[in-house]
Length: 327
Image (cartoon, rainbow, N blue to C red; front, side, top):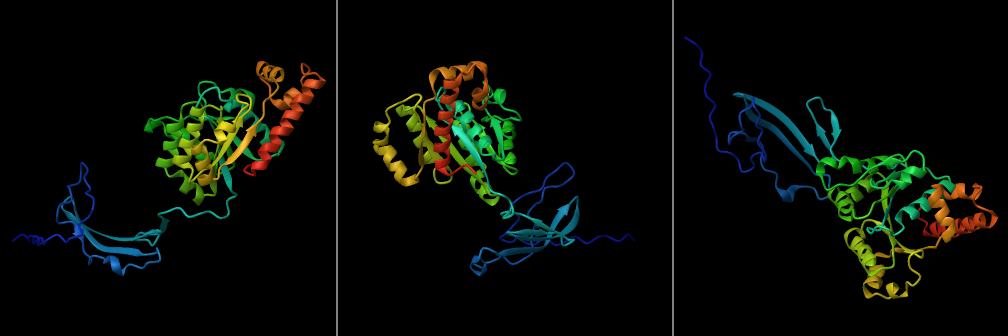
């Protein structure tokens, strides 16, 4: 007479069934017979120090008709498998890493002087012999990539399948600080990238900070974009309000705007003046597609013009240094 496997008695599911089902082509769905064989952990009994551990043992489930027992030990720091292997569940701050920063050059509007400020910023970092990476995210122009060597390319998209092309910026910041030249009209994409991925918190864990350098045209709409950025990111990201004197000479009316005054009191952002670059020298630099450093030694720049370039760089370098944000 053949031996017959006795049927396992099905009991009532406990009040804490598994919060998920496992289904595949070779697996039967886990039904009400799969549950945790452990008394429910009372919330009041958990330690209050944030290091509470929830241990779940003897979890039975049916897999192709066979019962499999799995021991799971969950905590807020490690997952121990049957071989007592410790795997971090949450990243811990690496105190040995040198702090780096992601410098975002923004303005939202086209023609605000964003790329020109990026060039000054890049050459200041080179002048100070700082270790940094340049990222040109302006895929339509890429004037930064044309001027400097070893420029990384990236772009921001509202398509989740293309998110990795922006993630590259954060990855680069693990090695050195990053200067990002943004195109116009990507505010929503950049903000969503930072907020949806919780990058400010991830940055804190890895000694990576964000700094937004906002180049303002002097128009009310440009100021409103800056105030919007403060509202969305001002609690987590340092903001610098840059007065582009190449586009606007009068800034008193902005400094007296109630919204601007209230925002400055709340967020304590830095205000910086971006001086006007002499007209003829700027046209020559753009036409020749050269750096400011090259202009100082270029044969088409005569003695006085070279001195104007030197005076300008001294002025803007002093303003950048005064922010104490570039290291």
